[in-house]
Length: 126
Image 1: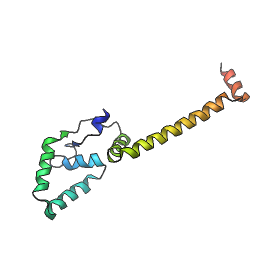
Image 2: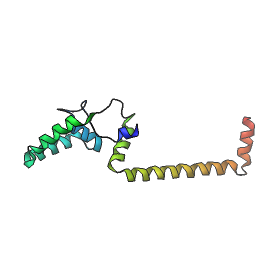
Image 3: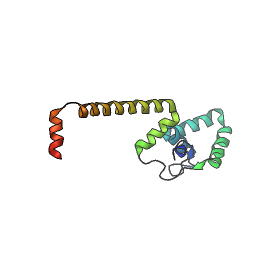
Image 4: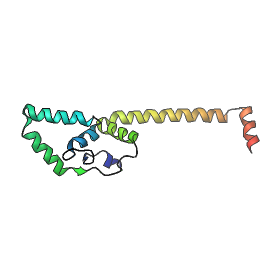
């Protein structure tokens, strides 16, 4: 399912015409209003007719965004980060796992040390 979360989709549920701008906003994490303003500006400032042709080609070729693609808003933000900078995301995950590993090692060290109070508490629970 992760490869499905890194693909571009048109977002017809949040779109105005065909969902292309909403799909770009979902893919990049940029607010959809800014994508729409940029598209209109690009068209008016000399991109016509190419922006219109590209818009309808994308609308015709791209798949519709599946329902339930993300489990939560945090999940959506995570995958937008993966698409925009996969190296940074992998680095952040590595750092998080190193921190978890360090904390588990600290817990293990505390648990296996000669802590008589802890040993007494564990024995009292048995």
